[in-house]
Length: 134
Image 1 (cartoon, rainbow, N blue to C red):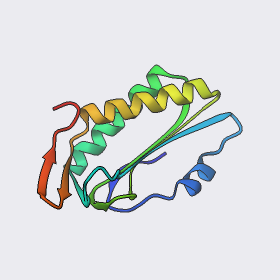
Image 2: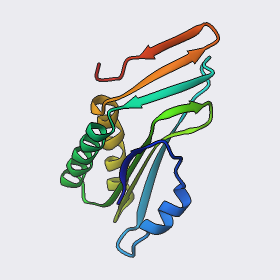
Image 3: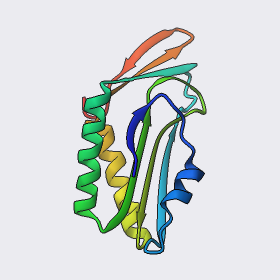
């Protein structure tokens, strides 16, 4: 399982193939993508060590809360353009309900607690966007 904050893009198909397991009947993925809502690009910054530690805590909480079998979380930082991947959460479980619930739990906690900051660049200038937990 992977939990990381990185400048590199991710290859979801490769990760899904690596995680397939005969005990898992469901794999749910969430991919956050840079949306075009009047921006030209975004910049994501993080204190990587603290962000990874918090993602690991969230992963462990998801394992304690739901009967899931695998969790991968990859969050990108750096300069990203519209259409670029931002975050991938991949949750494997015996059944779809647990996989969906685990995935939703992780993305909601990530938005609330993980110290990753976003700056949006528009034609008019730039602005920091407060996180959900701020």
